[in-house]
Image 1 (cartoon, helix red, strand yellow):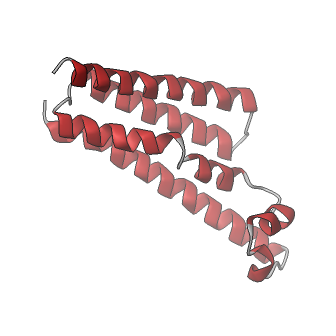
Image 2 (cartoon, rainbow, N blue to C red; image 1 turned 45 degrees about the vertical axis):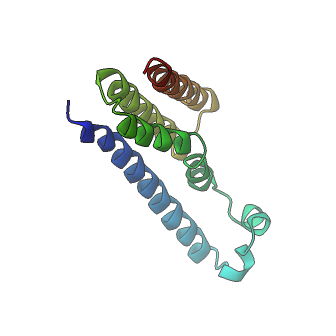
Length: 140
């Protein structure tokens, strides 16, 4: 297996982050334009929370810098350790798919329990990826 293949899920996660950023950007600009909100009036998170009514994309954008940070490190660790195989690659793709589902739910209809199931499943997959990498390190 080509060890570079582990970087494709990483690129897709980065692409997801850019897509959510774009949605957040256009939602915020749209609301600010419609409601004639001066940019200085949303200079802090507290001010933005008070004035910008739809924070789904912004909330999801922040989420993409929580668990996914551990994913990025795991992918780099797998590549560095020479642990790119069907298991690590499969777990990486499952995590990315679950994060895409989580983001899609979060920025659209935002049903909390649906979002939670995608989030929790992704978290368990990430734990499994890290356990797999740790086991490979301990068995080396």
